[in-house]
Amino acid sequence: MVKVGLTGGIGAGKSEVSRLLASYGAVIVDADKIAREVVEPGTPGFAAVVEEFGEDVLAPDGTLDRPKLGGIVFADPGKLKALNSIVHPLVGARSAELEASAGPDAVVVHDVPLLTENGLAPLYDLVVVIDAAPETQLDRLVRLRGMAEDEAKSRMAAQATREQRLAIADLVIDNDGPLEALEPQVRKVWERLHNA
Image 1 (tube, rainbow, N blue to C red):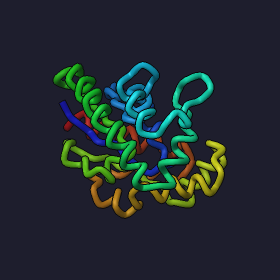
Image 2 (cartoon, helix red, strand yellow):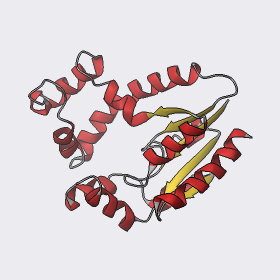
Image 3 (tube, rainbow, N blue to C red):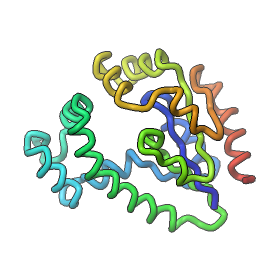
Image 4 (cartoon, rainbow, N blue to C red):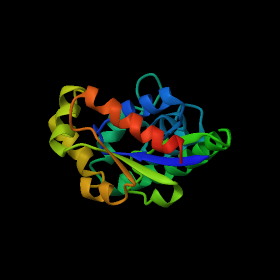
């Protein structure tokens, strides 16, 4: 088994790279997806978040109002730390379960947005960083995701810098250009991972 940490700043293109790697045969362990699952209503994570932040973070349907919660935690480092202390251990446990269920010859790609920030690089055989200029990230967040520019900048500022991510990279995928330039790079990375 080859354990790969995949990371990049918000808007860098992790989702597209993960999709491509999965299409080649990688087992994807998506930390963001798991982070949503572990705070679904009825879970211990959901109960802990509501206890910490109050019922104001609930949507009318009883689920977490993720944009509202995001607005709270990304504006206050202490509150972000509190949320992370609830969610990260749950995500780690579920990620370990998924990895354990992969075959011995599998390439397991852990899609971890905050890999750099949380010092997780040593957990992986290789770290792949999807790199994009901050201007590209901001453009994608505003134009493609419909975020307000201030919110996008706030989320970007809460993450590691481009230089910090590149410092831990074993392999770098440049995703500053158009989508069609991405696939050949991801294919080369896959060939290296698959033959590792």
